[in-house]
Amino acid sequence: MRTFKLTLAYDGTSYFGWQVQPQRPTIQSELQKAIATIVSQPVSVVGSGRTDTGVHAIGQVASCVVPWKSSGRNFGLALNTKLPLDITVTESVEVAHGFHAIRDAERKRYRYQLQMGGFDSPFERRFRWRLKQPLSLQLMQQAAKRLVGEHDFVSFQAAGSERATTVRTIFECVVYPQRASDYCDGLLLAIEIEANGFLYNMVRNIVGSLVEVGLRRKEVDWISSVLEAKDRTKAGPTAPAHGLFLVRVKYPPSIQLESDAFHSFDE
Amino acid sequence: MRTFKLTLAYDGTSYFGWQVQPQRPTIQSELQKAIATIVSQPVSVVGSGRTDTGVHAIGQVASCVVPWKSSGRNFGLALNTKLPLDITVTESVEVAHGFHAIRDAERKRYRYQLQMGGFDSPFERRFRWRLKQPLSLQLMQQAAKRLVGEHDFVSFQAAGSERATTVRTIFECVVYPQRASDYCDGLLLAIEIEANGFLYNMVRNIVGSLVEVGLRRKEVDWISSVLEAKDRTKAGPTAPAHGLFLVRVKYPPSIQLESDAFHSFDE
Image (cartoon, each protein chain N blue to C red):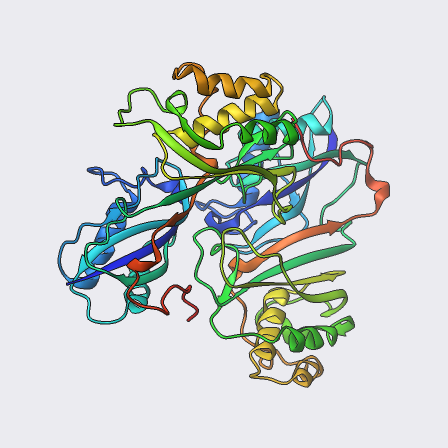
């Protein structure tokens, strides 16, 4: 048996999130089904974290232990012939035994995509939260800076979720204009957040709060007061799921056994 | 009764093309259904041309004559509340009586999107033809130039289609690298062609032929010989539908009655 690390891109629109659920299509269940077909036995995969219904990924990571005899690259290519069109393995590599996609993750990076004005493009509407009123990029950038560092983010955690500790470190929190799209009118913005871990709904609650500032409904200082309040009722509304992408999960380089497989498949 | 010119963007993936067909979802039938709901009577729309199954549009144009009392802009906004999510009215304006989306069209512009290498991105695969082998951009650019001007394009017309004349003028035929996508690996290329009219499957047959040159299966001069042969069997294969976008249809400015409605809806 060998351990593989799979990197996945998916359009989450048609799925009930990552986690297996009875009778409902999820990313994890599609992936497990594809692997089972390839290796002719049931297999469990571990994801770096759950993504919610409608959330997308460019770089979700999953680990699995399978009786596969060829290279990691060939494992990925084989899986892509079995996966639905909206889920793709972009990288596949053999890793050291014991690798675990959740436990070994050092950092995660999310991107949230916004559209200011314009129309609801048929090509982008599943991937952006469109706001009709103008947003101040500068105010959002100022507010975003207040969140960087080690803080107790309990105010940005969804009600009802329980974690041992709600202290996390945000290494980066940036708001930036994106390139104009060939498919889409309006001004495009993105918020990217990299941290050593995230509480449930933390990104979407931060985005909803930054948007409150961008819309000038709240002052920049308000973000700091939400953080200090340590009160789940103080943050802004939860941004909708469909603008959110899991972009990257970072692991220690030492886990990797193959040297050349971290490339996208080009054949 | 007043005449309106509608500009439409659509993701053609789920439709059997533009033209109404019994029992099958088409863009024209969805649009006619939406208009009928708004004005409470059956309405026929005229499109600037048919798009095939799976072909997309950023700027398809349709005309209709309806008993609508408010502005063109409000007509478009009302339609967008009734249309499916993958079809959007991006502009709507009242035009002079007698405007006809096919007859009055002066030029049309198409874009065909390619991806060289990389993986099949879940976010882009419905909108690009992915080629595994490298393409020479330079050779494709040289070949594209051979097609500009007034020519008999019968060699690039689909077999079985009949037109009074097969002479058309291509004003522009360019092959260019596109911006890298945030969703997609590989090198992205596009081919844009603007002409006073197109024969059936002409863009897809030109693209298939330019790709033959890009893959170095054919010389640049071969494109000229295909054109000169006036023989439908000489051109390259037909490129798949899903990379094709109708980008723009140009009309004389004089047709327009309202001055301020040619903007995308920003509220």
